Image 1 (cartoon, rainbow, N blue to C red):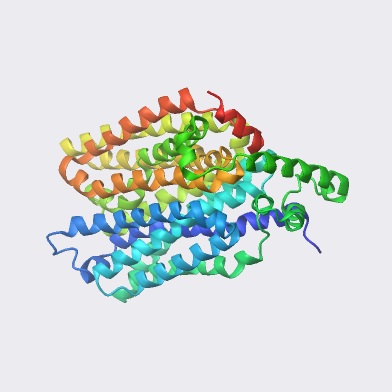
Image 2: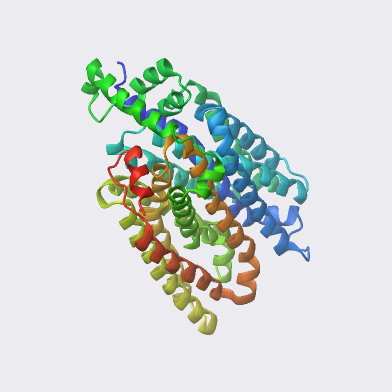
Length: 470
């Protein structure tokens, strides 16, 4: 039986989200890897005097790679098209994952993390870019929200695979096989992405009218497939899209124009601040250094890994809820509620950690773990998917790749600053390091409430006008 047009579009969106799984897996696998005693001993991180610096470098250079990867999309997504850019990013990530698994020196491993970062930085930008351009406005939030759900599936699979391989007796296999899995997801994406329809918006922007129309018919059915049985309705909707692209092309802009023109500068600022705000909540710190945090609470290695896996397992369910309700609640309201909730959870974490540091006790340790779980539940159900949805909606087609790349660069820059400093910060000032996240997130909440316009239910073209208002 032939699949309906709506089901095909859903499959396109889900398949391209293998790039989202890749990002989540590659970003999360470092947590359980650092929790594997065999990894620590193999690279002598238990005896080196600069072990904290090397651990920071494994996370820091990954984020540096991610930064350059996302910025590369400013050119690659427009030059190559969305599909070919995804293909190249998938190949780079596959190579990086394979090199990590085969590393024989800590320097080789760190360089491999940098290469992987280049690939995932592009993937985490290109996936929501493609999804937003094949999704109708009425259900765009839900479809682009799949990006967040699949990121969390990557996070979760990395954690549980890490837990499972801890019990493997062969020391090398404990960490090499989980690292090798990094190469599977992008390899699958590379094998299939060129068979997906190209973004009709990108094709129209390149004046490839006939190809754009065929692609449009494949991906832009509304919730009812009866739409596709009405050729006149299809052509009318396509003509509207074409006219929007023509108007956008009249304002062909360079990257410099995004900073020079007030309306576009405002959009870049909004997208950048939003991504910084999502990282400022501290979720990435908890994810990447979870086992170390749980070790400081007195948990043994097995419980560290299991708690970490349980913690991240909350996120797919939260992101699923996020994708389902974001089109009902609104983007800005979700961000404000989520960031406020994360601040409250971190306040609870700070209080319980201070009590644990002063008095010790299993009760304080358990309470600290509870607030970390509460934190990720709030973040996943309100902020994670919403941030990518919002950033993909506020830029017109000719500059969407540039704008989304600049926005997501905020993710990697802020993650670089927070993750690079976290090992030293926790070692030096302990729980007080969370105060940085509390202060930064509180400041972002004010900016979101004051400056972020709501774009729910609007076409991307209308959002362009809405966000440009002073």
